Amino acid sequence: MSPVWNTTGSPALVHALLEASDTYQGLQTGTAVPRRRFETTAALLEQGAVHILSEGDRLLGMFTMTATPRMPAHPDFPPAHKPAQLSRLAVAPELLAAGSLTGVRCVRKAIAVASALGADVLRSEANPDLQGTRQLLDQLGFFQQGPVHTDESGRRFVYLQKTL
Image (cartoon, rainbow, N blue to C red; front, side):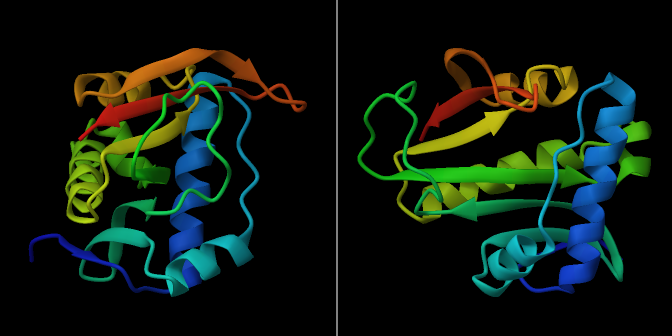
């Protein structure tokens, strides 16, 4: 059975994948694990914004794509006509540990989805301490917009953008 993309699935399983991926990344890098709300996962799934790569019942990876960013554009971003937002990129921990290309497949699919939506740019927020994720985004044409930021919890993040 080969992996397939879908925008429907169990909110509990999708949220579990997101949390497992976040926890794995945090343990590998010593960075804070983001707090994710199940209600947000369920709502994004219901909207069809979550793209899931699965093989049978096994979830391999996922990302969220919104044509309308959930928050106003940060001033670090240059003006755009029709931006799309990539968020909640997650890969099953066993695949991350094995060096799988699932993350590459997820980001390439996100670029294709944003292009199909007519977006002129694809924006994302990323933890600069997740070096593998950051290198992946850099290699696929995302460029940092502005400096590294730190929020009140001490979490570090950067804004990235890819012109489509």
